[in-house]
Image (cartoon, rainbow, N blue to C red; front, side, top):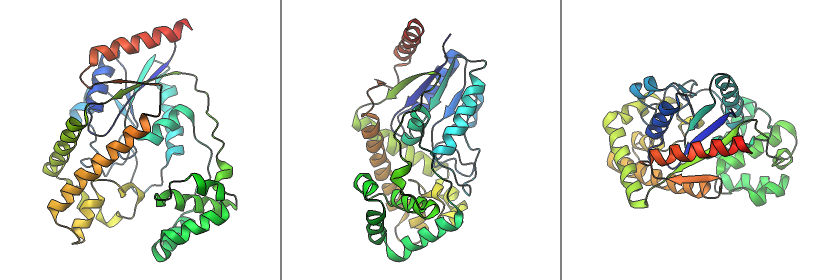
Length: 305
């Protein structure tokens, strides 16, 4: 039988975890997380890590196995996830992946260009310049040294601009010169299951989840990592708003409303990204039986081809 990776994706708070666990139980298999924040062991409430019962029900991989102090990117994820997949495929014909981190999912499906590891001192220098000079100065520098990438990058995303400059300072080569845009071939079948519901219901779920996070102790969790707020891992919805509250810039109620608003915006961004992928088959989170039929059909077709 062919080896199959089934990816359950969709916007935040849609119900990916519960559905993935139900599917993994049905197929007697395991789950790899595709959430770029659930990998950090210090973060649990704000990243909606599966609870202990869920983790005990089905074995999960790449959940809370890294520190927020570690440098970690999509390239690291690709290497680790493929190693786990190769090991699981020795005994499983189907493995599930669950998450909404768009870049991580694309990286595992199509690969990522090999970029150099950035020296911590170089990163510190670039961040220092950003803090002193502001983003406009760095945008102008990027336009000068790498006009090709300047024309394609999201100029509002300061992290992308900073990273392009880091690569240039490390190697003397333009960031665009590393981007081949060549898709890597995978030796397993990929089936993508997208989850979505109407916008009003999704927003209700997001708001309810945020309220539950606050109730479960998100403020205390954020306080426990406040000293590391400059870490990229903490440039995350749910934490940065609470940090603003700690700094006295907003009230706790304003922070909670900002988390809800920014979570809704992130959900829109996720859906916009996923909607460009015609290989995704879309379902409601409660359509378990339909999804199983679809997966079985896809696997059967891949075998006959």
